Image 1 (tube, rainbow, N blue to C red):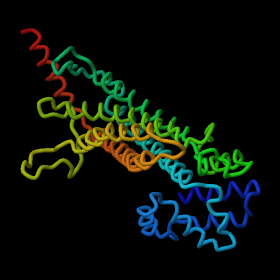
Image 2 (image 1 turned 135 degrees about the vertical axis):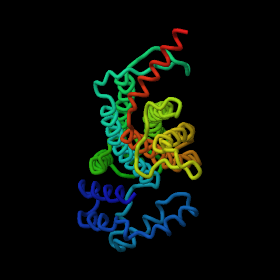
Image 3 (image 1 turned 90 degrees about the horizontal axis):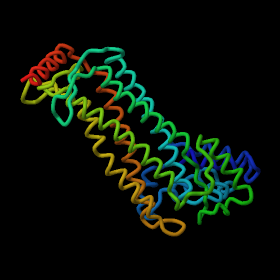
Amino acid sequence: MLDVEAALASAQAAVGEIPADVATRIADACTLADIDVAAVAASTERSGVPVIELVEQLRRAVGDDAAACVHRGATSQDIVDTAAMILACRAATIAATRLDDASTSVDRLAGDDDTPMIGRTLGQYAVPTTLAAVTARWRSGLVEAAAALRELAGSLPVQLGGPVGDGASYGPRVDEITAGVAARLRLVVPARPWSTMRTPIARIAGAWALVATVVGDVATQLLALMASDVGELGERADGAGGSSSMAHKRNPVAAISARAAAMQLPGLIATLLHAAGGHDFERAAGAWHAEWPALNALLHTGGTAVDWLATSVDRIDVDRERMAANVARAEAERQR
């Protein structure tokens, strides 16, 4: 939110709406170390938004002569929504990089390795396939998920709608101000303010739904192949995977954690979509507020799922002797 306030002041100064030195003072005040975050939190309970107390603190910081230039033309939703887009962009970028890491580790597992392994369909032995074919399938999903997050990060828009979402409060140079804010925050300029047309929220949900599908799928397959009776893969990390009662166990905790996080994502995505599709009039009563915790949880839990999956794949060892034994076992069963 501080980044948005600083960018807004800078963009307004660039078109002559406020003095340049005042914009600099506002930017200097927009540092987290100077903000009483507890007061902002307490105020949020009273006012329903975190922006009112934040703006009051900024106005005190810049002094009475510049106070009117803080948050000029803006409304709380502009600041909250644009801040949410910044966070969503950062989270998507970080997660895409970790998906790249997972893809690299998958390549290390197999590469061009044509080691035979038994395929399984509907939980039963099928016909042999290869480790390279299996890991190529995983990699294709990881690459697609990373691309979806990068596309998302490059499409998220600034929000400058003002009190009723028409941008009029910013004056006749609203388009230039919007473009300036977007450039400074590395966001895009929307066709119109999206205060109650929440397509950016739906895009966030959709991209992370794809991530949830890929992470959940790969983590589930890893766990299946690491089951004791299969044993074709294993997680290897010093000190990880122990049991309090069974000293022999080495549980695949990274894959378990990835799957656990991925399983939480569909519920968060559904909540976000339900809220995004329920905005009334020019600012929603409740639906907008419902997005906040769902979005925060989605970004945190989605990032957690991706990070644990990358960790798991990096730890994997392949037991090719076990793969060969399972192929032979399957062939023996087929010939009965």
